[in-house]
Image (cartoon, rainbow, N blue to C red; front, side):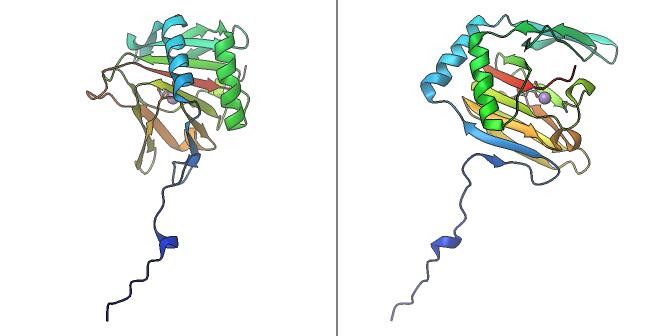
Length: 210
Ligand SMILES: O=C(O)CCC(=O)C(=O)O
Ligand SMILES: [Mn+2]
């Protein structure tokens, strides 16, 4: 007689579908997956590439004046000044398109933001080094809503004490929200890679305390 196999499908491992927390402890970083359809995401990507007044960023790192390969833009509710890496930037006025994106990010995260730092990575030769967004003007345990358009890039988080690393691919049109104790306990980076040959635009909505 053939042996009976008991298929217990209920116990089979299943991948969660977004949104889910990608951190195992000491913070919450919620990946929402793509919050736009392909056509809308493409349209926003082309708008951002073409209409944002992108500029290379300048920084003072260990007393040295650095011009970053990556380009940035800084928008806010008022002409907020944002000082980081030894440089002060004055916020541009929201465009209607950016305000619409902000509204959707707020709906998904449940937080109201007053500013946005935009990053343009021309290709995989450009990245962002390990850091936490823990400047005083952001306040403790701030929520940052980060949207991605264009080339998919890997987002890494590293625990400050334990050095454990967590990675998430950021899809075209996707949203990831760093909240809770994330900035206190984890750093994040966008690693350089030879595999990516096309641009990626990233929008990080923030609540500055002025
Ligand atoms: O490009 C990204 O996804 C990360 C951007 C970032 O960490 C920042 O602007 O502080
Ligand atoms: Mn950051």
